Image (cartoon, rainbow, N blue to C red; front, side):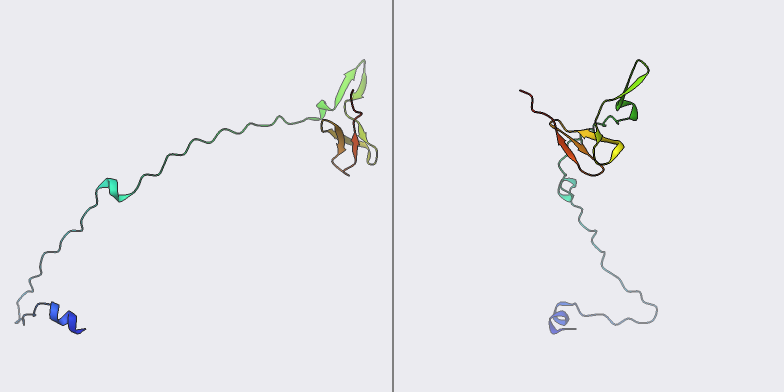
Length: 107
């Protein structure tokens, strides 16, 4: 123990056989008011629901006319039949090889 600790402690009584030590009542920890205990977190706005994209199905690539099948999108010139080109507004693009064909400009 340090010298300061010895000076501040009250002198201890010597106990005889059978005597009990009287302890000072311990103070209960001070409770903080509910307001100061935890600051409230600001409420977050609810997340907007995600819109589900409509899936493209195979029937959207063909059109039936008079018992004949008409393809609605062009086929890739490099990859051949079975690879449709994606429509991107001003161009068609093949997702397999990356070939791009631009649409003719409208006047």
